[in-house]
Every structure is written in structure tokens, then in C-alpha cells.
Image 1 (cartoon, rainbow, N blue to C red):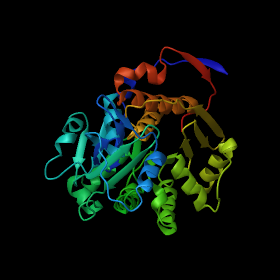
Image 2: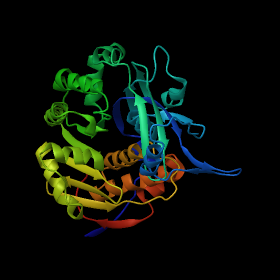
Image 3: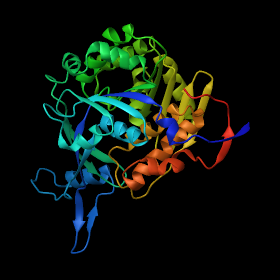
Image 4: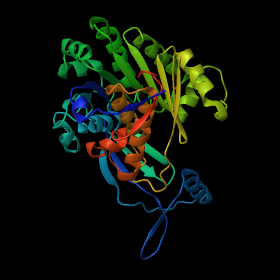
Length: 368
């Protein structure tokens, strides 16, 4: 192994371009109050504790006080677009940002990206606990959230040109709403065959556990089709990974050797790279490459809602900088840690995310 010094700067990211689509949500983040006195509110530590509290009430009606909700941009697409553009990446984002006018919540994002809005956003209330969260939402309007409506605002020829001139194409929230899959399949059928060049696709599934077998089969076939047009990088959390593992007829995996499970699912999917993000470790498998990075636990997080998007943003920034695989994973770890601690990931944390002042052992595993 050789010592490599990170010598890149923010200016390197300013030369990069990405396209991101297609969801958008208005998030209301709150915490259910377990107990209170004159000075402080005590919150539930976990979803399990909250569930027991509800079950103890049996059939009784009752009320439960919440903290006054904080409203912020939500959805994988807006959060990742916000983070990447904050590091200077040239972001084109298409999504449900409001129509006929952009929702005021997304106006700041429109000032630092090229933002194309073709539908109204979904709404989400996130009940946050110390260790996990419960998200209750309603989706974008399926009558409006369509490919035909998208190309009314972003013509197909222009979409082809964007695909040809982008360093990474990011498709997120693939499984939360089937309307997203309809849009993505139309792109795979009508746009990508007209484009040229080498592409990288970064995919986030989101909540694929709610899908039927046939619906999940549709997602898997879409991933395989994308492979005809470029490299496919799939990032999953543990719940999404478990769903894919079950899809291939496996009940559970050995957590003491997650590398084998990640390798198995990646090969079955037929994709180039699979990244698994767990509470303890991040794992990556590509042909001939296996890497892991230890995650960082934060005891009292500022937010939980959006941390997966922050992690994926760090990974994408590492990919855009062509870092070796282990540093791509650590960029995701550090971005998630930054979000948990500060509620944001911005360019002021650049040196912390990429350890630009440190040398590290290079393993010569190229970036996906």
C-alpha cells in the first residue's frame, strides 16, 4: 500500500455535473412527548417504547402532545440536491417542487440549482425518537406526477442531452410510489437509448419492503435494464437490503459476515456496485472489490429524518472526486455523522468530510 495525500479542493467539485430526480416532500418533524414537567419534556427513546405506550391504552381514546413541528425540505431528491449544490456541484434537479409556482420552501434550492418542477410535493410528518423514527406521509399526486407531464417542463431531447453531459445520474425514492417507477421506465425506454457516452447511475430504493413480489420484480428488471446504458451503483439501508435478500429466496443473512450477503445480492441483481449502510458498518461490493468502513454512532442526533440522504450525498461526492472505494464509504459515514450532529452537511465541513489535511493508505481499489 502507498500513502496518498488528498489534494483536491472545492474547485474540483465545481466542475462536476449531476442530474437528480424525482420526488419532493414538505417534512414536518416532531417528537412525541412521553412525560413533562415545568422545565423539560421527556421524549420516547425508541419506536418500540412508543408502541408499548400505545398498546397499554388498549381500546381507550386518548391524546398525546407533540413538540411543535419543524418544517423543512424533505424527500431524497431535494435533500441530496441541496447538499451537492452546497459543495458547488452543478445540479439539475427535476421533481415535485410545486406548480404552477414553486413551493416557498424550495425557493432557496432553486437559487443554487437548475430546478425543474412538474408536480406538487408530497407531505410527511416524521415522529422522531432517540434511536429511530416513524414517517407518516402522503405521496405526490399520481395524476400529475407522470413522465408525460415531466417532458412538458423538460423536453425529451433536452433530457437526452442532460444524460449525455452529466458526471452522475441519481435516481432516488424508486420504490416509495409506483409513479416514480413509471417515470424511470419511460426514461429507460425513451431517453437512454438515444443518449451516448459512459454513464454512472446512483440508485436509492427507499422503502422497497412495502412492494409485492411482482412490484419488486419490476424494480429489479429496471436495474438490469439500466446496466445496458452505464454503471449501476445501488445504495441500500439494512431494511432495503433485507427485502432484496428475501426476494432471492433467502430468509436472513449472517450479520457476522455481511460481506458474503452483499456479494450474493450484488451478483443476483447483476449490477456493478452494491453499497449497504448499517448502523455499525458500511459495505461495498464490486467485481474484485470488497471494502467496509466503520460507521460513527451519535448519541443525541439533531435530526434522524434525512440522514440516509446525507450519507448518500457523501458517497456521491466521493464518487465525483474519483476517490478510492474505502474513502467513498468514509465520505458517506462522515456526511451522515455531520448531519446527525449539525442538522446539515455544507461546504464548511469539507475538510472534515474528506480529511483533506490527512494522508491515508491507498488500496488501489478504484471508485465505482
